[in-house]
Length: 424
Image (spheres, rainbow, N blue to C red):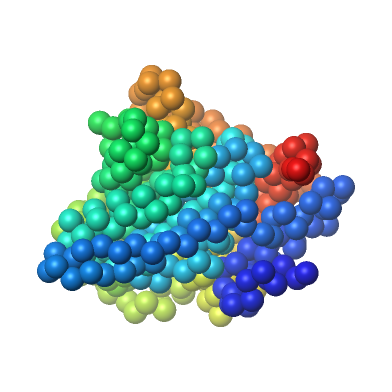
């Protein structure tokens, strides 16, 4: 049986194919655990649900929702829920698989899961968005729970969406279950530091990589693709530590300022105007020119698959720091390696969010909450330790950081699989 035989409709160059390619590169380093590698090439469970809701005008619309649990060998599923017009089962499968790797790379006691609803939130009223969320939560309620699978925010979802999810699940089980989701409002058991945790993680891991590459942060040129929560938070931290954010791109447009953008002013402008386009003090450039801006650190922090082979051939940077999940295609990875450009992979670079989600989950169980300073200190310690292990493995095996991260993660996941055995 081939790796794709159970789902023959998947694209040969789609996100799932990218993930499978990454797994194949790890196979030679797994030793006796290689006998279990097929476990990683098949999701444990894929749930596809219909979401019928009554619209504000009285009509009924149907949306398609997904929840995929890729691997649960090391603990309950963990992964976000995204609302986007282009969400597909294949995308959610790949994202769930990357969550398996990410959680294991950071050594969190979770498996990998992911969810999504194919919709355009910008075209929904707040009440319609709430109805979609509550019906979706009810439909996937058979597979989620504080000890089964814990959703979190992702693209186009936020603390309010998590509050609706938590309330719906709680009403259906007859008890308040704050631990069923993370990324909640503080008033409902959310954690301090969660909102900026992913962006903070991108900065911390980027700083650690830069130190090993002898790349000073002071005066470093940073380009950011995607200026949502992750990209904006990372840009703000880089600027605060003396770097120059020279280019930013989001769905509204691309802005460029070789002397460095005022990141706080750019964040305020984007919030007020729905994007970075038209920001005072910056030049507008076309979308493709962004990938040729000269920088020291490039942060793709939007969607997967944006760093193609063609773009990789012309990239003018020293380090790619993956704030998004799966932004670099396999062929682009090889090109960047051959060009001597360091790629810091998503499964460690953007693991700050799920790490603080883990903290939130722990705090909800104990009903004892930490200060933001404690959260950040614990986050930094975990990420720095995880990155040091990955860097050491990369040097020991003379392999790229992505492969090293997958080696570390796959060893942990497959060891758990081996120890647990097969049931029945």
